[in-house]
View (cartoon, one colour):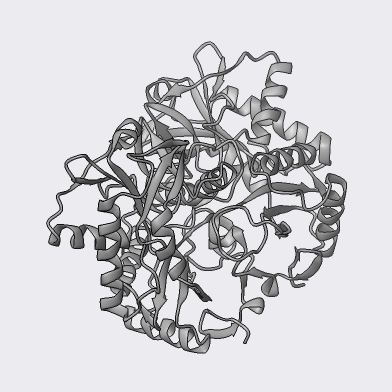
Length: 292
Length: 292
């Protein structure tokens, strides 16, 4: 079956799906996006993604292409058309197509693009046991990382550097502080069991999974502190892990080749992973064969 | 006559010209661009633009879609197809279309897009007499502004803020220093006639017109210093001006509503403008009706 995409009101085969070369998403990175996962045919934490999308659009004064319930309808219809039960839903809104000029165009209508692609989330459950490696990269991004824009070139370069170093993720370091990963949030577990992650200020993107984990961990009795931590603190931590929509909770076993804690996925990370997979099952009914 | 664009090997009507929604230029701002002007049917400082494009591509490890002489051929053919004598040529190269993933895709072929649009450069010559207003904005861009990428969202926001304040350009201020404008380079003229502009390091884009003016001004006996200057120094300067490909040399009469120098375009700016328009005529044979 061909993959179907949604572009500005039409459901079209992905290989034909296109936007104008004068779309401001292409010419200026003047656009925002969301990535959500569908599991068992249901979108996980979907309300959180829709709320963040609205905030991103508002911060950039981009008009909403449609209201949340219409967006929800398009997303469900696209999942159905792709017969996708386990999938990544990608949604992008640009300021629209207009004659090239830096300032906002007076009459542009926002462009809405949505794609769905099959994704086997159970690989993340299996990765929970082995964990991942992280390298650090200098923080190079712009000042408003709290807005989920497609100005992702520095993230691309950091992720590529991680790949070339044999790592899964790059943690960005700014003035000695770890902000976040190229596409994930960064966490450490201190020796007393306190969870630490960077505050959701302008320096990081407030991940939806990050927010869900804070809520679940607090309810489970964990102490969660939103504060910046250094590379030294990460190296000295009992455990470290990352969270993201497509990688709920993966333990970090090494940073720049040096082991974190015992150099294996720790018990706190495993417990937090179980909390998140439990929430995934609660919302969607999805349960992977293995949870590490 | 419909405007014709070039997209990946084909000359197509602009209104049909499109790229895949999975193009990395759209999804990641993983692309670079150039803007050049054609005057009297000839591209001004074209070699400088082609050289900078190659550098931008190399810095990001994006393959060249074709060599400089083939690019030159496409540009000339596109100008001819659009019957454009005075025009803006826009050229964008992305890393190509691929399944969405931050790291470099293994087999993507770069996407090449080129457009031409009519542009009456003589409006810039008329603007030389009146000058322009500038406001300042906090510098928000990423760390590698020396690469001419389409990660332009902060430039868009700064330009829009300038428009809303009734100004032509926004100067970005970082740690008290003026880096450059949203789409132009920033210059001041000190009381002894020395020209000062930010060094061409990672913090600014080395404008082609900036380079041309440095060369012409030095040959004309001016002292040119490439060093950072502050907002205070700009306010206290004898004159200030901006340079860019589409606005060769425009005097800045006020910054944040406060006059620079005598609050009018100064004699040094006018002389530099004449040097640039002379070079434009030398290279292209184009001469606007009025030079302010």
